[in-house]
Amino acid sequence: MIEVSVEAIASLAQYYDQPLRCFTFGDFQLVPTVEEFEGILGCLLGGRKPYLFSGLYPSMERIAKVVKVSTQELD
Amino acid sequence: MVEIPRKHLEDKAKALVDQREWTSFIDVLALLVFGVVLFPNMDGLVDLTAINSFLAYHHNKESSVVAVLADAYDTFDRRCEKSSARIVCCTPALYVWLVFHIFHHESKPACPLQGHRMCAEKGKANWEQLLADMVGASVNWFPRWKERGVEVLSSYEGFPNVPLMGTRGCINYNPVLAIRQLGYPIRGVPSGESITPFIARGFSDPNAKVLQRVRKAWNSVQRKDKELRKSSNDVIGGYHQWLKAWTQWKTWLPQLKISSEEEAETPEESEEVQALKAELERT
Image 1 (cartoon, each protein chain N blue to C red):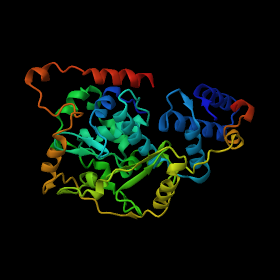
Image 2: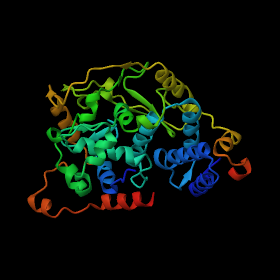
Image 3: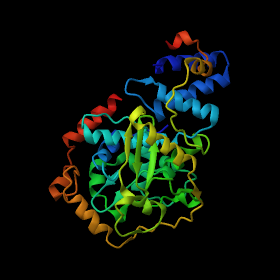
Image 4: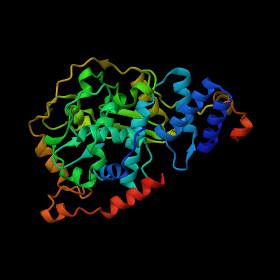
């Protein structure tokens, strides 16, 4: 379990450079990349194929089946 | 719209333990991780976007890394437009990422998470001051876990940079600016094309065509076993001049001025940081 420093994230947020999509500091820039996030999360998150939202949400029946609840409970 | 309260799933997980239904227990626990850690929701609900990405993982072993990263960019992007917008993304991943770029370590961790646990300084840091004092030469561009090799993603068909797709839409980032994070020196000024911004919020009709292009690009993306170079944080060419000109007019950059000694002795949190902290504590 990672205990996140709220101060760290709040401080970092101030450096976000919207047009360049990175964190711009005085003489350098840092960019969160797919490769690095794969290093952080990759072992947990399954295969290579990236999850890309299809535009369609799953049916309640499908969800209910996985979490073993009745569809009424999801309403 | 289906949303499941977190509490409901936690109770379900406990009940499954009592019933010794281990396979279902693991599924419910995984769904909680998706809904609480990877794709958090402002209201403490496990929402349909989290459920959908969990099902893609569960049934098809699809990786949520790209979506997690997209949502991080998305939340910072929205904050630029509305400063009261809350930071809603996988902050643990972002925090690990930040820590390994800020602190240096001699040991060679097996993975970034191990390195993160070994880093004792992070807990003692005054982050606002630390980030204000950072210069390029002190950044840990190439943390040692990368020495095991990283497969680098190469071009995306039809896009000049990386079009991420998350749970709230699409947003790009620019690998040309991340070259030092692969252990290579940054050379010169990035071309205008390579940093072309791209954003599509939401998935409904006006965006449908472009979202199709993004899906196509990801389905044909190539990976290279690129040889990473160790820790070269050089700058070759006019990058610094370009960056200086770029930041000159940026009033949003908080701390580019060099703090006076007096300020350094008694660093105070700016109002914005205080507001952000309060905001994050609520999430």
